[in-house]
Amino acid sequence: MPQPEFLPIQWKSTHLSLLDQRALPGKKEFLEIHTMEETIVAIREMAVRGAPAIAITGIFGLTLGAKEKQGNLSSVEVDSLIKQMFESRPTAVNLSFALKEAKKRSEGKTDWESIQRVWESYALEMMVEDLRANQMLGENGANLFPKDQNEIHIITHCNTGALATAGHGTALGVIRSLRDQGKKVIVYADETRPFLQGSRLTAFEMMEEGIECYIITDGMSGWLMNQRKIDAVLVGCDRVAANGDTANKIGTYNLAIVAHEHNVPFYVCATKDSFDFNLKTGDEIPIEMRKESEVTQFDFLKTSDGNYLLPEGKTAPFGARALNPSFDITKAKFIKNFITELGCFVPTEISTRLKKV
Image (cartoon, rainbow, N blue to C red):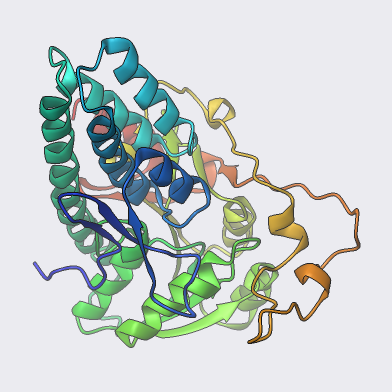
């Protein structure tokens, strides 16, 4: 299988190097991370994002946390490190699962060097496994489309590519796999307010790959489905409840409703670690509320000398309040198929296809 097009997460044996996704598409800039606290800040401030990438980064962060201790670690101290890391992004279930596994692997060990080695090994293992899973997911998803269809039009939301994973991506991985089959893929990337992951990151990845891509604002999907033949909506996810209800970037639910109204297949792309059988429905999935300033101002509204084009980058009146939920819940009834590394299946098949894995 081909190697990933981007390496947004790079382990340097003594520290972590992260592609700062806040700086894209303006420049490719890496953050050199030497402490667990710096890792937490990078996750919280979305220098790194995407559920699989967050999980991998989180375990490397624990590795740095163990190194900082330079002595014996009690079970209480291990639990404290894990709790701090979990609180950096609570919605993405991949991180929660990875932290539970990290704790399990460190059981019976007390010296920091042993714990560091086992966590480092686990994080590197996760990178290899995530890339493999994404490539298999991509192939499975590509096979949902007719073999004799040479041109495919797809709407995406947020960023679900190599930047959000260890490489290849989930929803964008399907698009890459379709391209690799020789098909012409036209991508319509929702801008994904307020953080603009679609226009900043998805469009960036597609241009780097030479895949035709048009940015649309989040309110344009209905117009687009009326005006052009859309073959599918492909999105990723941060957590899936046992009944198939899915948490993904805010705006996904709206897109699912519009797709349903226009009879456009709505596919959720997810590796098996995104499914949380501890939660019966999407009502139990925690929704992260982020700071209001992400909605009321654009930090990138600056001139070359660092001055704002608008006062302090404001796009709203001073004192205006904003709501900023980072995710919403798409009900299972709107999802045609889940696309995973283990195959494609409808929401009612989740328990039979995944629970015993």
